[in-house]
Image (cartoon, rainbow, N blue to C red; front, side, top):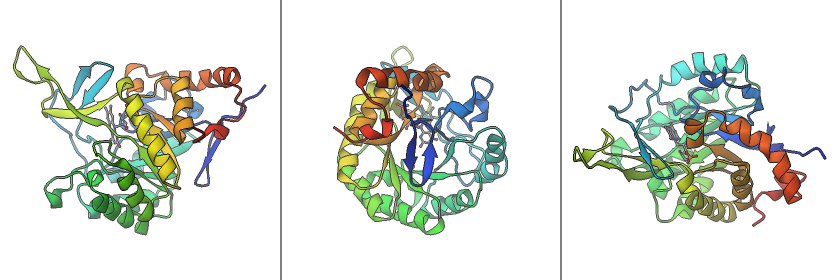
Length: 303
Ligand SMILES: Cc1cc2nc3c(=O)[nH]c(=O)nc-3n(C[C@H](O)[C@H](O)[C@H](O)COP(=O)(O)O)c2cc1C
């Protein structure tokens, strides 16, 4: 029997729920020679800031059990390059949902970037990464405080007509309070989770492995924690959730959807295996058959 993998979300159609997560798939074109990008339900592009950034000093990546640490530091070519070069070039070959991932260090920067991205024809969704430090508030990440997360959401909402998804940080004790604050401030949806703050030490050199000292931990090991947060938020909020964190197989996608995700993002697994997303998509129909699922959207938030 033919399986229905399609998902509708905020008026957009995803051919399937699998989306490479921001920062693990460049601006899409980098992987265009590896496989047909049109197999992907959507693509979340590399986090973009108002100005171009070189990112952190190297080393920026460290291996860790069941995943990886990164401290890339938002290296990106800036919002002008995103809307003038990267998205138009991707749109020449890609018809699926394009998600612009926007980062900022002040509420004003988020709003300015989102206004530019909103006006860019090739972008369908604005994904607002609130894991960045607020330079006007001692560097505390916007996403660790409900009021700061709401302030960013409100400012972005005011300048955008496109769906706004706020991407939450898991480095909090009460993810639901942050999620609700974003929902009340006008978010159309939520993406969760970003990376967990971590660290590795080189015991011979007696210094941190990452030049930045700390970094974000991601990959298969975080899956159960991410799943728990997706479940909590999907059951506490009315807006849709894109689930992310440790997803590496078709079974993980189904589990995330049962927990409450409408769309599922795959991050670090792309770094390990660039073919991860098309392989997961190809494996979904057979697994659905085994589990007696005809329509993938039927299983969202069923557990
Ligand atoms: C190398 C790297 C770069 C990342 N860059 C971004 C980014 O620019 N913006 C963002 O919102 N998340 C970024 N992330 C976080 C991922 O999008 C994802 O939320 C996180 O890695 C958890 O998913 P995973 O376990 O499948 O990797 C990055 C992750 C990695 C590994």
